[in-house]
Image (cartoon, rainbow, N blue to C red; front, side, top):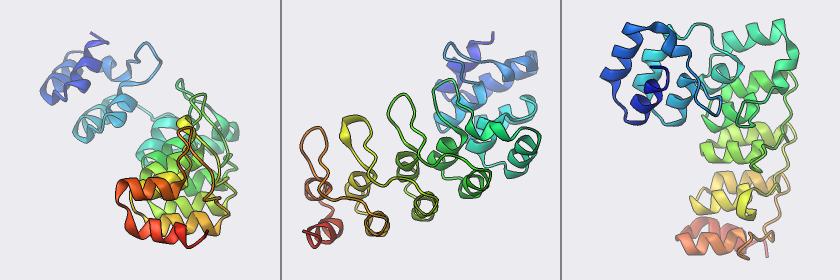
Length: 215
């Protein structure tokens, strides 16, 4: 039954999830073969209604769930009890700060930074905190980790930087913040593309103009 919950999450079958919890509330504590909790899986798959079903049945949130859901009160409680949790790694290799950033939880990110989170932590899959912040498309969050020392030139899989991501989505504000923090527009992806090249490819005219003005 425990693994049935993951199939129901993937299918976005809210009724089935509710049935499984009603039959045995312990399924809310289930983890898949990769060690990911049912609650985190629902968060990863962007199933907010299922998250709300699982949350009260799942008991106390752990450090990763707290970061991903933006539960700052729980983060503070956990970190007050064990400050080393700020450096913890999830079963898929992410720190709490990675998760707070990816899911756009700026208050959680601020809390983690204040507790000494490593803004240059990199997952085994080569995703740095700056990439998680860029993926959120939240300029304020990106600026937060940059101010806290995140390297704007970190390259993830395929050689992309946060500047490439800003170019892809035509975000002048994020591109400018990265440039102000020392992002190098000359860095090329594994395919040989600069951020300006990507901006042109994606039709991101404003960012293309900004980046070309730096040449």
